[in-house]
Image (cartoon, rainbow, N blue to C red; front, side, top):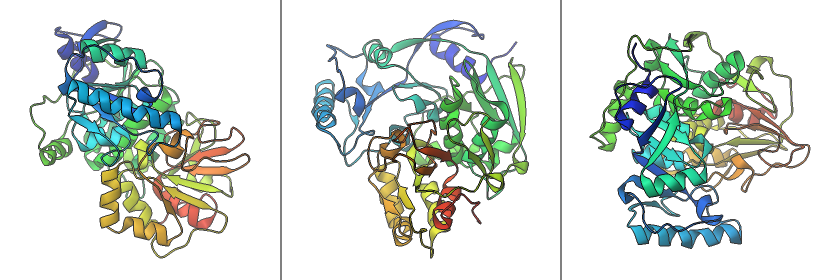
Length: 412
């Protein structure tokens, strides 16, 4: 019996011939990513780390520092990077949401293992990587030893067929899956099939990122020509793509006909079995519209928002906040005129940060407000007040709704 993508990656990095669901394996970790919050909270300075070339530090969640506590973490990070000679240090000015910075710099590579304390580390799965968020103590252990352990979970295979319609995004694909199948606790998700070629890389990243919201362990995409071209453009070489064996054993294989999908919205509280097509959502006036996060703050997301907003105006009483996922995205979007279009429509463009997504700064919502977001989570209290309601949709839907003043489908 063959192996799934994740089983094959774990077997390779554990140095064993085979891994099956239920097996516990100790593996070498190819890249460990630390974020600013680790340095702002209780930080234990190690005496030695396993390999500085396999460590990156990204200032992302609270940048620029909104509190004295966050500001105190910055010097800790800089001293740590200097002491151990960590060259992959993305300080303020080179910063961004860690998963975007990981993608831009080719830190998540096919067939390898990546660990980070952020729960949306599964975003790296879009690059045929075994990427997973782990607790701070475990990441500290990896930092010192270069290794960790996993128990291999069963895998659900999504066999993608057909072609993704122009008006449908990766967010819509995920919201359809979450609504149709619910949670995937203690399961791995694997994406492949002939329809994969029609899904752009930025949409694959959105789908992989959102795997955390249905409690999946790993959320991993097949390697194909799209990925090969991506890494060639980055000049990243020396990796070994991983493919599922034809006779791999899956807990379930689910076929998704991409051509049948439509734009979706998740209602407040959860994405799991809580969505419906945008055209069927109850009419709700919105107070805030947010486009950003590791899931949907990519350059293509800002392009889509700018296309929808160009020549239009945000509805009275609505705040549109747009947060690029990284400083590089910010600069590129500025050069391409996307930020001009967003600002001319009445939107506010913020610095690259996690910010409003986790209810910390640059867009916290208040009691009784309704927010339509393209970020990662919509549970109660996520973006601010527990008395606010958070709907989730694609950047196109969010932008169109900001203009209409209520949730509507975008015309693309």
